[in-house]
Image (tube, rainbow, N blue to C red):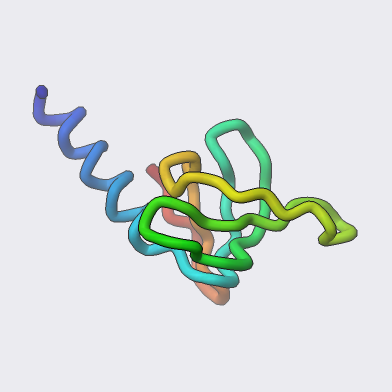
Length: 76
């Protein structure tokens, strides 16, 4: 692996590992949501929509950006 790609992979792993309940996230498919549950080291449950009735289990690798409450955005 070349250095820039390896660095980006490491940043994405750190981003996925830092996910916590309450974090606002952007998925790689472009959906915005809020983490409502951390199931295990691979899976989280994200809540989408204004009515807050759409909860979808997702892999951590499907998250491209994370915004912690009261902080700025962490980008890939």
